[in-house]
Length: 206
Image (tube, rainbow, N blue to C red; front, side, top):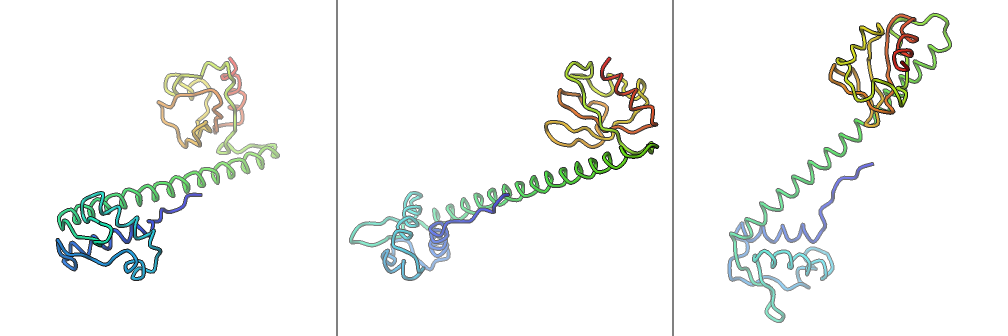
C-alpha cells in the first residue's frame, strides 16, 4: 500500500517565511523575530524553527546570529527557493500518483487472474467446452517456444488456437501481439475448438 508524501512542518515554515520575504512583509536587511517568538507564532518547538531557519540560511535567504536575531538577506533568493520547493513538491506529487496507479494496475491484474481461474475451474467440470472458453497451458522448460515470438512460430497455423493472454513473471499480458516473445515460466491462455488443447500441448512438447 502506498502512502502520500507529507511535507514536514519545518519545511512548511521555511516556505511561509520565504513567501513573506518575497511579498514584502519582511524587507531585505530587516530583522525578524527570534526563534522563541517564531515558535510561539507557529505553535511549534524552537528546534522546528531552528531547522526551518537553517534551510533558509543554506540558500542565503536569511542569516541567523546568536544575540542578533535573524536578518533578511535576499528577496530574489527567497523567490528562487519558493520555486525550487514547488518543483520538488510537484515531482513528489507525481510520484505518489504513479505509485497509486501502479497499485491499482496490480490489483486489476489480480482480479483478472482470479476471474480467469474461476472460468477455468468452472469449465473443467463440463464435458462440452465452449470454443470461447480459454484453456490454461504452461510452457515446458525445454519447449521450442522459449525465446521465440508468436509470429515467428506461426502459432495459430500450427495449432488452430488463439492466444488471448499470457501469465508471465511480469504479470498478465492481455492480447499479446505477434512480436511477443515467450520465456520460461510463461502460462498460455488460449481459445479454440475442443481439439486445440491437445494440439497446443503436443506443439509445446514437440
